[in-house]
Image (cartoon, rainbow, N blue to C red; front, side):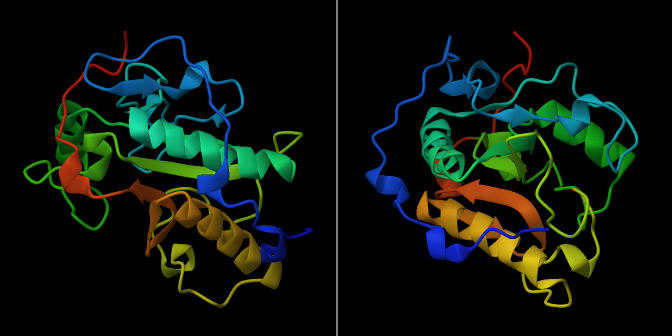
Length: 205
């Protein structure tokens, strides 16, 4: 598969003058990304197609903090210029859902302990990949929520095109203020987690 060359990273994220529009912002500062048609969605925890094998979300809403939404829109503009777009697997996760996931899988290797919360509970983390203009996912080497070493950013025993795809995704996201999770190529956190409180805001409205 043709890979996404890191030689074409510009323009820089902060230089973007693109402004997305949304139908509404939640009172607590959450934005529903589903209202932006430039994104794609496959909200896995609203289905049974996830490592828990259970549907734990009542709907497929993708919410993030408004500042995070702005950064994602800017990153997506760069991807769109190359014929790709962001596809989300997971966004904000209410604390009650985190507790439910912990009951199903009480293992901190896979699920954050709700006592400390997850960055997903703060609305400042997303699980994502890229898709092309036909909606086909870019090859990142593993499925979403693959918990083996093959999903690590530092794992080098993959085809060159896969390594380049991951590097391209990571480079653009970092330009736009995100930090990669070392063990999960799909997971990106935004900014300082202490800026955002753990929330139990309803996912569906």
